[in-house]
Picture 1 (cartoon, rainbow, N blue to C red):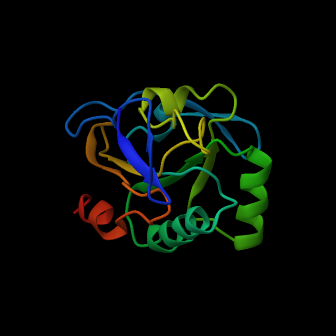
Picture 2: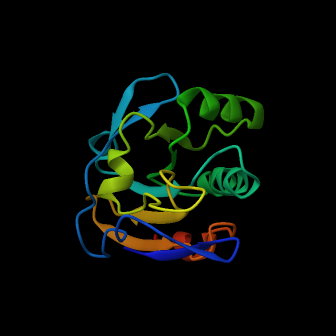
Picture 3: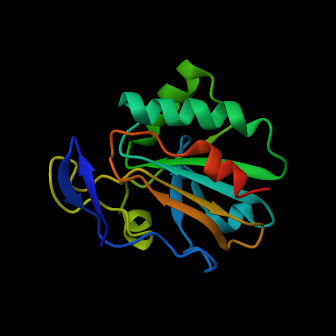
Length: 166
């Protein structure tokens, strides 16, 4: 379990992020067109997972915009923006913001992704949502970087995540 804060108040997650050097847990998430997407769909590519509570909050939306901008500079890399939002909310945001360089995925059906990655918030006002985190995988699905953002209202360390791919 990780301890993070929301507005300075302590809250907790269901576990810890996958360890660096370990194989990332598989997942099945919903795309904005309601099709299923799995980790296997990205086999042979590097993956940046931008994980957050809700696309309808300022910091979450900013992280999607920032990764969308940076994604154009990355070879053989997919950026996945993952939350418990509905696929419809994620599509609305993607269409209105023209974020074509990232893939928006939803864990709304059963929350299994949040549980497998140890980032489901277990108490406080955001209970049931994902914490803010970044997980980077190499071409073989091995974790090469992770960041559990300690204060949910803060942005992730974009540069550290990108440097892990160098």
